[in-house]
Image (tube, rainbow, N blue to C red):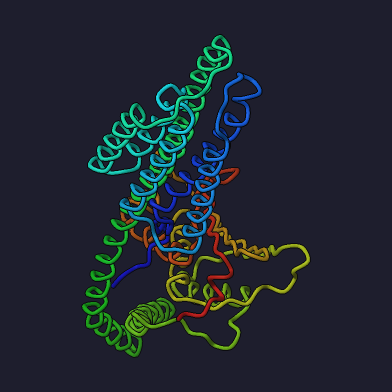
Length: 429
């Protein structure tokens, strides 16, 4: 038995996210290098051969575009591919620097963002490989690079200092921006993993409860049949006082209701949802649940309020589901236990959601217990088992809904169930 998780991990591949950020980082670097290349001559009187460096930047930009297209239409990205992408950036940057002054070019500091990115997103072995490649590339510039012609030494020195400052500022911003975004992504993924683990633990607990419930239902068949026979014999006994006949009638009805619950449990276990026609109106669905509930709690008379959205007078049609009905019944029972004389249910809907509110005037739930309500097994009543709210949460979670518990104005509790209508109307595959 597997209960579907609603808090699934994000389908996005971490490698794809990192490559997407790398494309953005590479685009910023190409734009910055283009600006520096265009301004070197007019501003600092340095003779720079524009043809080859410009061709290299155009080739780099074309590779970035191809990478973007591959990311959009391709498969997931591996760490090996990320290493190859970063190594390509090292090669392109080294080639650009070789034609624009080599190690004397202040833009050599741009090696550092590439190494920092590798250290942040790649396994240790790959990060060390890229760090060594960057050292080798920088070292080769001392042997294989063109010396630029400087027309004004003072301007060249000024250009070098300004270039070092700009490169430091750009590197700091790029590293901070990339690492911050990547850290946020990792933190979000860790939260998703924690939520998935928590949901998995709850699901395991619910499966265990389901197995126990199935065993209990099987074992209850015999004593219920015995009680039904004895109640019938007592009712048919002429010596039974008339004053007890009404109580016996109620007792037999309760036994019959228990037997029906067990029969429905066995019949619906593992069965798909019924798709009868176009479903049933929300008002009729609620009334059928309340009709069943009245047989279990005949002395409690709830009030029902339909509060649909403005302009949508007819209630939406939904396909009922046993676990959802059982969730509503469990919450109604909790409300009746808290305040038998004041139980209400308010039904509202919008174009997208169905919302049920179950209200009572009981003592309420302490603030310390609100967070674990429905997540941990506990009960505010000595005779309570505490599993009703757990099962209600599980049923609602399966349909992408949520349950919220809050204090009611004037005393008591309001339990709100919010369900997406698209899930209630969706046919099972």
